[in-house]
Image (cartoon, rainbow, N blue to C red; front, side):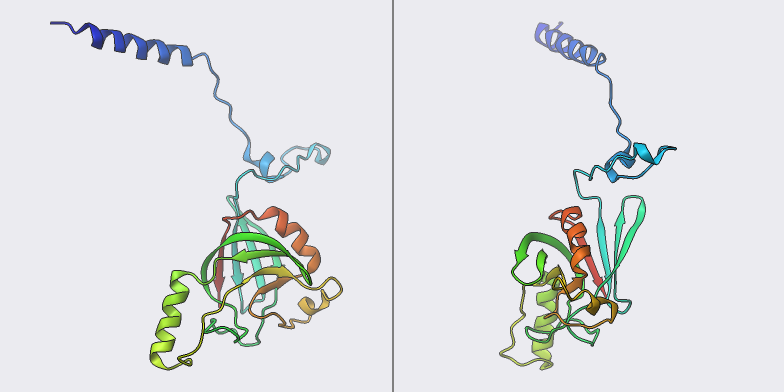
Length: 198
């Protein structure tokens, strides 16, 4: 026996599918959003920023470099400095060491001394586990705390030279030139992945 309700529902689904065939699918060239010049004439360059983060940040402490990658590969490299001459992983609050691992940008703020600041989600679960092992082994004092407030920020406005001379001056953060921070602050949205390696 034919079920009239099933036939009615089938006709509605068919009608909806048929009606959507009139819509055209729009594809957008990702180069436009990335601000790349794909035209023969550079005067036609479009400089729109991507609406969603397409960047990943990799910081290599031993090379004093921060490299940005987008979905096409290498985007740019910036010189950086840290807090301590030692390139060891952060152990506890006050050691001025920069933590290693996988992080994300979780906030943006303006610091009264060095301006624009990209806050990282340190300490992560991985950070807490490393800290627990160090404490249990006696490698750090029992009263030690893990610390926090780690991020990426600029130098003071008139002290960009500390980057060129590889002077580590922060409390464990990653510092770029004050002028580079203007670009990075606008380019890297909250949620951007940041990998810090030795």
